[in-house]
Amino acid sequence: MTQKRLLCIAPQSTDTTALLGEAMHDWDIRCVSSLGEAGRELRGNRYLVGLLVHDREQQRPADIDTFLRRHGEMQWVGVFSRRDLEFAPCRDLVVEHLCDYHTLPVDPLRLSHTLGHAHGWAMLRRPHAPTAAGDSPLIGNCDAIVRLRAQVERVAKVAAPVLIWGESGSGKELTAQAVHAQSDRAHGPFVPINCGAIAPSLIHSELFGYERGAFTGATRGKAGLIESADGGTLFLDEIGDLPKDLQANLLRFLQEKTINRLGSTRQIRVDVRVIAASHVQLQQAVAAGDFREDLYYRLAVLPVTVPPLRERRDDLVTLAEHFFHMYANEKSPRLKGFSNRAIEAILEHEWPGNVRELINRVRRALVMSDGRLIMPEDLGLSFGIALPQAALDDTRLRTERRALRECLDRSGQNVSRAARDLGVSRTTMYRLLSKHGMRST
Image (tube, rainbow, N blue to C red; front, side):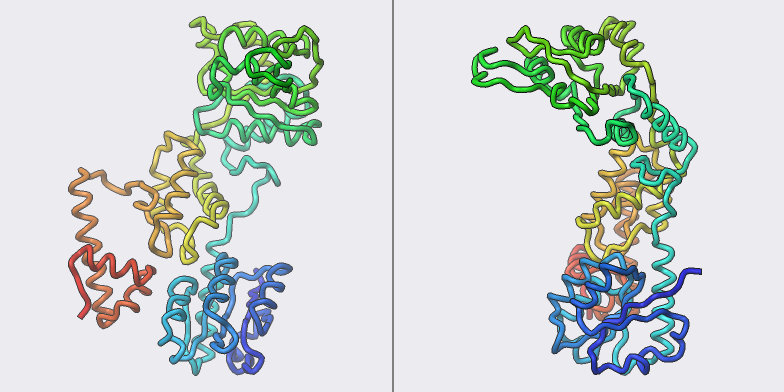
C-alpha cells in the first residue's frame, strides 16, 4: 500500500496538530513555513497531496500562483479565513489551482476526509506503470509495440542498413532514434534528413557537400549531411522521394563508404550506419520504375515495420496521458486530466493520422479546455451516436444552457460559486452566460 504523504505549508504560528487532528495519524506529514522551503522539499521528495494554510501577511497571491503552477501535478487543498476569500486574487487561486478548500475555523475530521479524497484522486491520476522497455522512447505494452521493441533491440546490435516502413505519423523517426540509442554508435551523431523536404536542385549539395567555387555563391567549402553523420547514424526519411539520379549516388556511397563533394574528385571516407524510412511500399515503387531495385535491396537488409495507432488501442490512454504531461507547460493550471467521455472518444476514434494526430489533438485540448478535465469536444472528437452537425450543435447548446441554469440555481445565483462548481473561471462563466443570453439574479 502506498504511504500517504502530505506537504503542509503553514505559518510557524499555526498549531498543525490541532488543525489536522488525530484522524491523520496514518499520514507521513512534513510541515514547512514558506513557499521557498516547500520548493526545496519538493525538489528532493515526491508528494501527491499538499495543504496550503493561507497567510495574507506572508504569502502574496502572485507568489502562490507561481508556486502552484510549478507544482500543478499535485492535488492541493487550501485553508483560508473568510475575510481572505473576500479578496479577488485569493478566490482566483481557489478556482485556478485547488481541488478543494476549507475556511477557518477548520473541522479537523472534515479536513482529513478532504485530504484523503485528494490522495485517492491523485492515485487514480498517477501515470501507468513504466513499460518493460525501461527508457525506450517507444511507449506502450500492446503486442504490436512489444514486437517492435524486440525488433529494434535485435537490429541495433548489428551495423547493416535498416529500412523502416510505417504510415505517415506512426513514429518512424522515433523508431530510428531507438535503434541508434541502443547501438554501439549511440555516442555518435544522429542526423535526420527528410528527402522529400529538400528542393531537388539542392539535394546533392546538401547530402554530399561542396567545395569552394563548385557553383555560383559557393564562397567556401561545406561538409554535407552524410559527412556530418560520421561515426553515428544517418536517417533518410521518406527515401522514396529521392530523385533517381541521387539514388545512384546513394547506392555508390552504400557500396564504397566514400563520397565526393560537389566540385571535387577527392574521395572522402565516411563511417555511418544508414537507416531509411518510407510511408510508401518501396516494392511497389520499384515495380513502377520510380525506385532503383538495387538500392532497395541495399537498404532493406533489416526491414522493420512500425504499427499504425489503430493497431495499438491498448496503448491509446497511456500515450494520451504521456503527451498530456509532456506538453503540460502549455495547459491551464486547473486542467488536471481527461474526462471519462474524452477517454471513450479517444478509444472510439480511428486515428488516421496516427501518433502525430494524437499529439496534435492533445495539445489542442490543453489550450482549448475551459474546465478541470478534457472533454471530447476539446480534442475535436465526437462521442456516441453520429448526428448531423446542425443537430449536434443544437443538442450541445441546449445541454450547455440547461447545465448553466441548474448550476446557478444550486449556487443561489452566485456566479463565482457556480463557476467553481463547473470548474471554469469567472471570466469563462460570464462569457457562457452572455452566449446564452442568461444573467444571474
